[in-house]
Amino acid sequence: EASGSASGNVTVQCAASSGSILVGKVVRGQPGDTTSFTVNLSGPGGPYAPASVSQGSPVAFTGLGAGTYTVSETVPPGYAYAGWLPGTISGSGVQCPANPPSVNPGPASAALTNAAPQAALCLYNEPRVNIIVQKTLNALGTTSPGAGWQFTLEGCGLPAQSGTTGPGGLLVFSDLPPAVGCSYTVTETVQAGWTPQYVSQTAQPTRGGETVTLTFVNSWDWNPRCIDPMEPGCSETPRTPTPTPTPPTPTPPAGTPTPTPTTPAATSTPTNTPVTQVAGERTPGPGGSPTPLAPATGFGPGQGQGSVSLLLVLAGLVSLGLGLSFLALGRRSR
Image (tube, rainbow, N blue to C red):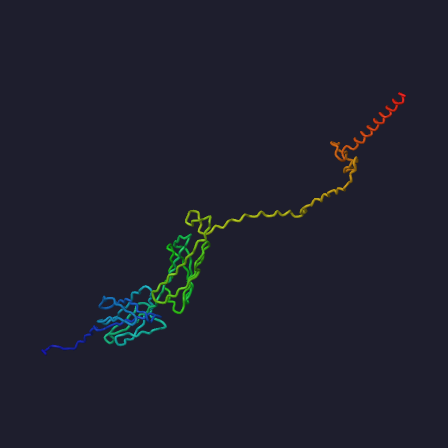
């Protein structure tokens, strides 16, 4: 050591270069789910390459220095991010609470130090299912998507929710909890003029990301006056014939007696009393006057008897006269 020189000790704080963060995955209610999730690490010394994690297969980010790190994930379809909790390192794995009462919202974070160069994080997800409503209209054998139809979904402890089909006849009920031990019921609001094949249908999707499609078909109530519902002026609802109004019965003014129809008296029919007609007599008429006999036109029985009697009298007189004449002539000749 040279004269006049000085010496001392210098302490150097070195950043940890062997730190690590282990990330575990929990899918609530789906212990057998092996879906892979992509996680991203950001912090000192970055950027870091994304990694994949799934239930039963944690991922480790190694070679980290001291500092605070943030872990986030890319959520795949059919799942929702629920939050995170610190985990416990067990060998090369991570133990995570299976059913915690609550979790921390937002991205997970961990601080590494020289004294504690390792940390474990547990990311929680909830599976989600989807129910798609496909509305189809059938008009005389021609099918088309049904837009503007309302449907209501109920079940599995959720409040009822409604929606309307779009131009393609589709309505999606998304982000639903899996139907584990329950089922969902979808009910159609039926429109006039259409007969539904099903008014309600049920679905029970249980796996995260599962989608169930329910098809509702309605047939048009055909009206002969309106054959094609697509033609101008043709309504999709059946046309009900307008009833012909019945004219009201006039009510007579107050105080005016209602005339009572009078039934005409029955006309008595005279009874003809049979009269025995004697030849040569005249039959009395309705007023008691004798009815003149029609002149005889022949010599049949009962006709012209008066004339025959007169002729016989005249013939007798002529014969008598001729006899007297011959008697007188005889006396003179003597």
